[in-house]
Image (cartoon, rainbow, N blue to C red):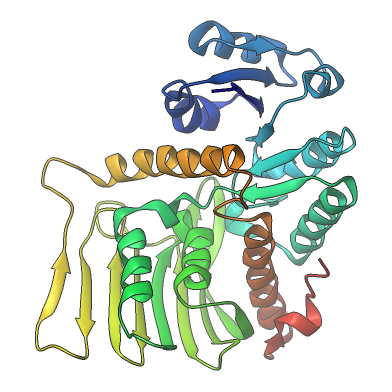
Length: 333
């Protein structure tokens, strides 16, 4: 098997804790690193093996099969555009695609910056992908299989309560299991909660999907970490699926039967086992797509669609009106 060259742009905590432990377990992988602080890249190479590059030019000359962009979201816009000047073959982004003020404070400008990143990638012929590792939780995968195998039909409505730590993932799961959003109308409350060193307001959003389904979503940082960090409920023509937290229960109500199916992970696992394992699963799926010359399991477009929803929520709150996402924040890709 021909080794895959996998480069990491950004060698901080996310790379060390969530990616490299899984990458080193893969066969036929060569690792390369670039970080603005060269010593951090060297520390990764000493610990996990691989080559260190002193510039993006040198990394590009190595001709990696893919570059994992794992920088902080606050500086990802600049890092991504600098990388794309070298026309890499593939780029894989951490989430969110872009968030200048942090993931709990995505702005309209972040949507435009994210779109600029993907437009630059298209112009350079670079394939883009996103992590969105919550798609690879056991319950998310099971829900996808149920929707593929059973006559659940179209989604009718969606509801959710979400901690901001899971916010972008929850929006993506709505896209994954329900479909793209069409319109959003949102309000923010006067109460703020400190999270990640920033004050974040609670948000209540009502929305419609492109297929006409309706939904509601509450975002907050007030949920205690020892309790579920998110709850999502999807109602379909032929049943209902409810997903709770990283290790909570998943309930399936199939309209053809009389029982409620309940799925749990085994008692020896925790939410953090689920969380860390999901990175490995997402990486295995992504690397397999490269080897098989197939589309990535989560395209870069998914990252822009998530930012589109967040931008729409912010504009709706600011202007006290519904926002048509495709008209006011066109993807233009």
